[in-house]
Each structure stands twice: as C-alpha cells, then as structure tokens.
Length: 242
Picture (cartoon, rainbow, N blue to C red):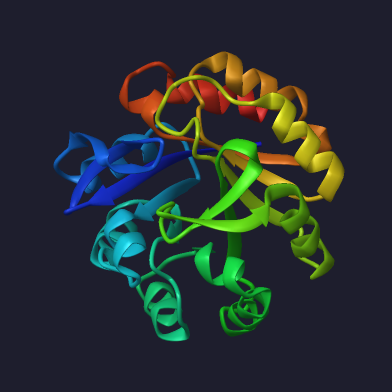
C-alpha cells in the first residue's frame, strides 16, 4: 500500500481546503517545492498534486511547478485539475506528469476516459469525488452530478479499468477520520482497486486501510493531517509497507 502526500496549489502556494470549499482555505507554505522536497526525503514514491486554480478555471495553471519538482526530486507525480481536453492532457504529460487524474471529463462521458486513456498510453486515473449520500461531484467539487458513487464505479469497472481514486469531500480537510464502511462497501460492490482520500486524520486510519489492503486498497492520499503534524510521514510509510 502506497502512502501519497497531497500538495494542493492555489496562487502558487500550498493550501488545503475545508470540504472542498474554495472560500475556506488554509495556506501552509508559500513554496510547494519546499513541501515536495520535505515529503520526498521521507521515502515516498508518489506525490498527489492538485491544481486548484486549474480545477476551477477548466485548464491547467500550475504545470511549471510540476516540472520544477521533477527536476529537483526523485519522485513520481500524479496531477489533477483542469485536464478537460487532449491539449491540456498532452501539456501535462510534456511537463513530466507520470499519471494524469481526470474527473469532470469522465463523469460527463466515459467515452472521454477511453479516448484519454488511449492518447496518454495508459497514464490516466479517474478520480471520483463524492459528498453526502454518495453523490458524485465535478468541476473541482463545485458542481454536483446526478451520479451515484457505487453505480458509477461499476460502470468504470465495466470499461476494463481496475484502479481509481475516491475522495470523500464531506470529510476532506476535516481531520474527522476515514469512512471505512463506505470504502469497504465500494470495493466489494465494484471490484475496483482504490486509492483513498478525504478525512485521513491519524496513524490509526493508516492501520485501518492496511488491514483491508487485500480487498483492493492500493494507497492512501494524505493532506491536512501531514500539514497539521497529526501523522508522521515516515511512520505512515513504514506501516503501509507492512
């Protein structure tokens, strides 16, 4: 199981939102490059980098930061935020992104996912961001869809995709802890392998996910709990590695 630190970028700074609300942000660092260096030195392999400006405006705004991180660190980057056409997809790949996260375009039409998957030569992963009652959101969490998390997960599986990210935005940035029941139910009902985000608050959450790793938990994405020093990253990496 991978432990993947999150870096959310807004106005070139490292921030965290509360439940995905752009009006409820906390700035932690002025320089995302310093954060990337800090996390990489703890032994992680991946960074989950979200371009909040891009997600809101509909096209990538911070790909220059990706290039700088890659130039100065031995780390893989998954990048999301505003990847809604082939041009922006190719821009992300040229900047050095190792895996491109798409949400809105897949939600609007799964044929987009199939096309993006082909163009990127498999460097695509869908992120399903859901709120209360398992309703799926899009456009940087600003717009609700009429899709259900479980039903849409089954559709993704039917395409032959095996891995996705699921983010509980009702818990994201809250430090409330993960909803282990929803996570388990999602895996069992969709037969997908997942990366979990949203609400991770303590080492105990890492242990809970490690205990169900065999069901299909591939990794956990941690944001605020690292910035608030609720989780020691080196300890989390050790537990996840077993």
